[in-house]
Image 1: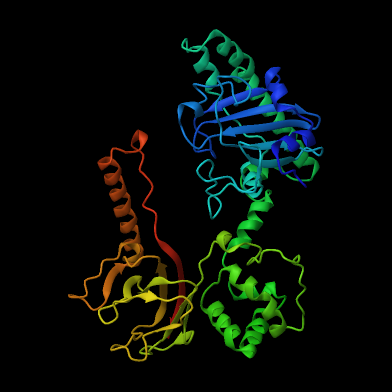
Image 2: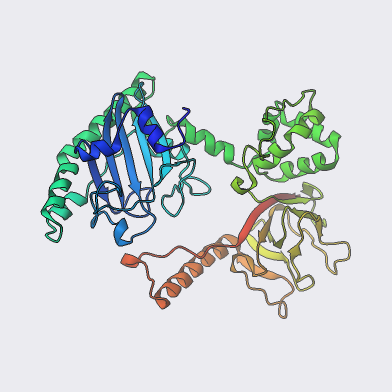
Length: 467
């Protein structure tokens, strides 16, 4: 799209003058307290442009008086003395073919690739950030969404506001019927574009896949198994596994991890350049511009969603009474917890334990469990499929609220692991409610506050087949 770096430049590109339109009452507005994206009140505003419509929003990261549309409905700052102060905005404008383009910006007009999470949220993204334009495509898969204004009726009945303000609001905020008709007209423009492109809007409204961009991006961000990794290298799974085995070293270690579980895509992408020549006759092509900041999988370290925690066992298949050995390696310092879930679903914390209570795992150091000098053995007693879960957290406190008492028990028994996790979620929620009541910050309407922020950095798991 080659969208400009500032909102004023975008106005020129779209052939719209936002300030002039507002001053001439050529806009149609709606304001409301709650929306599906914004955390605070939001104002949306429509401008006419040669290709159709130019919808822009005014979003806020707080609820101070100068941020309230109910107190300051005219704004934004720069137009009058009684203006609101917003913190950012989102813009949707129609393209010549009827589809939509999207733009995020700060209050000063600087373009953003991601909206600040203290202002807007997208729970469908891993980092919950509104991302231009993946978030926009998913939210507006039917084009312009319906919205109901709450400002007009409030202001017109509020005699504390001057007659001039009330008259301007009456001109800027249309009656509900007129506003809905405008939304319907703009939504129809988008739906007609879908039909011309051979898409079925009814299918998309049922969430069955016409909007392919979010589907593909989510598939890309998932952790990958051996077959998917092999496909990335253009090989069958068996040929890829054999190539990794022949290469040995770190490649052999990756083979074991892929056979026993899944890997963050970033790990495979970081190793792609070195692995491709080891598992095939292909050569990598370096397309990175000189001097460009190095990224993993097209992302900086800060943008990467996965903290790499590697867990493997010495074999994939075992017999009853075998003694497996696990290898664990973390990319950063963390505190490690290992849980074994047997074929019946019962969980046991196998590390830390009475014999090994210090669970600090230094970054980059390969640790084994049980260690060669461990005063105990870990034996597979029953046939079936067992799962070993590794959890890395930033602090030394117990992961998932697990309470150890090594004076009474050598290993911590959790009972049914799924039930344990469910109970722990309930306990955390109750503690958070109690905390809110104690501090006088109980959520409005009695809503349950969010659970405490976890310090867990990563989880991974492998399955062992015991015959």
